[in-house]
Image 1 (spheres, rainbow, N blue to C red):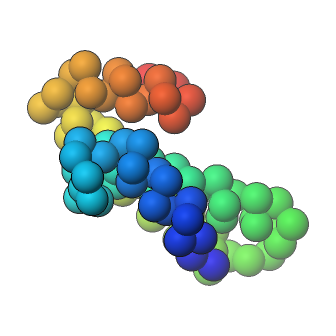
Image 2: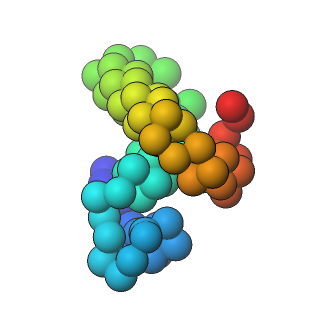
Length: 89
């Protein structure tokens, strides 16, 4: 269950540093956050789905690594990103 194309394009447009930017940490964090929310709602309905639970844990770990990286390299961008996504510090 990948993200819908229009939703993914909107996230890239909102968080990208320039047009078509899909590789910056801000975009990667925003895409992972959307995917994490999607998988979390799936797991609420399907409690026995351990394979997707493992995938969720891996996505959360990857997002945390990216957040630590952006916090180290560009603190204002980090604060803006977590504020816009509604993540806690």
